[in-house]
Image 1 (cartoon, rainbow, N blue to C red):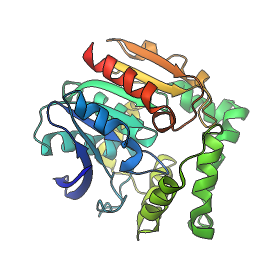
Image 2 (cartoon, rainbow, N blue to C red; image 1 turned 60 degrees about the vertical axis):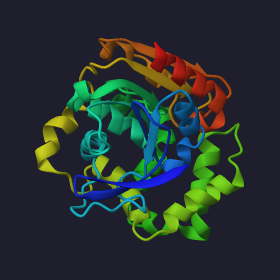
Image 3 (cartoon, one colour; image 1 turned 120 degrees about the horizontal axis):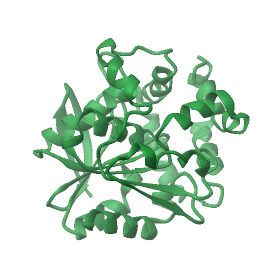
Image 4 (cartoon, rainbow, N blue to C red; image 1 turned 30 degrees about the horizontal axis):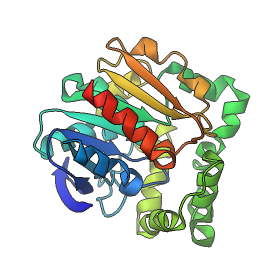
Length: 289
């Protein structure tokens, strides 16, 4: 994969990319990095697209946020700025986990800039927020988010060479053994100075315990249940042990231009890595429609 850099919103974003043609911007989540899309980039390139996967803000070698803002609304604006900085008026945006949140926000903020929207692992809609308050089962699944609000997470997560990350991957995708070299690659990213602090800040901003840009309060509020005026596809692992597939209920009503729902059997939270052939076929079929 070709490496590159692009300047957007005062940050230098480092990227992996393949191909030429219409832009497909691929956004990773946690605990992950741009190599998350190593199976999708070549497939998209072969189909005639320019597929670009940035390391998102704070994930080295991309710059940390100089203002300390890591809320999902600022990530959404990063997406729109990256599309422009890469030389395009619009793009297909494909987000996994935190990347999905950024993708939803970009589509809400500027639907004309997002040609199609593909998301995985994190559903959209008020039912997700409601689960924090009313679903004991889902609250248990979200335990790490509450844990990350505490200062001892800064010590516990990197303990024993980031064994915490291995445990999360195993818990969230229980039927899949991530290749050792990929776990090592993710750990190598997290070993870089500032990456863990940034990753934790994503969660702390979501809970209001880290700085948020007051200028983005309106967009942040809309990123819960505002209609998404972009054709969409949601790809979810049937065995995702973090986000139950029942959390997808109600999503379609928030997509006036249509939402294609795909539940992939035998896959967990990292569905695009676990079942790349299935996901790539779904993705290319959706983009060709």
